Length: 149
Image 1 (cartoon, rainbow, N blue to C red):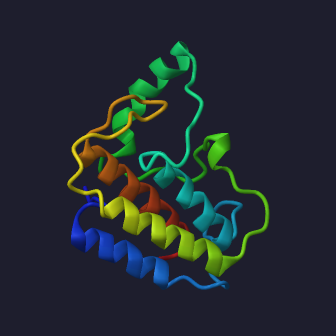
Image 2 (tube, rainbow, N blue to C red):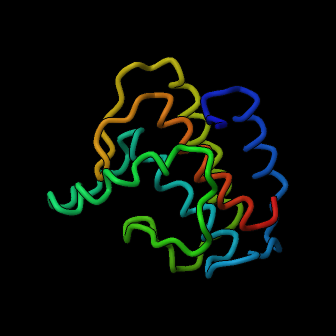
C-alpha cells in the first residue's frame, strides 16, 4: 500500500493534483473539482490537529473498529461511500484557492513523516504513523481517480 509519507508516493499525489484544472469533471459523485479539493483537506486536518471531530458514541466506535483496516489496506474504496458530515462540502469553492490549501496541507503532513506520536483518530482510535500515511494516500487516490487522475 502506498503512503503519503513515502517520497515517491507524495510526489505522485502532488503531480496528480497539479494535473487537475477547473474543467476537470467527476466520473462519479456530486462534488465538482473545487469541492473535492476542499473535501480532501478535511481528513488531513485531523492528524495535524487543525480539525477536531466529535467522538461518536460507544456503539458507533465499536462499528468503526470493524472496518478500521479498510481505511489503509490495499482494497480500493467503493464509489459513493457515506462521508462524515464534517467532511461534506456542498457550497461553491474557488478551484485555485482549494488546490493551494490542499497542497499546503499535504506538505505539512509529509513534513511530519518522522513523527512518532500521533493524535488518535476520533472514530477508530490509535493509528500508527504508517497507518495515517496509508490512509491519507488512499483517500487522496480515491478522489483523484474520481476525477480521472
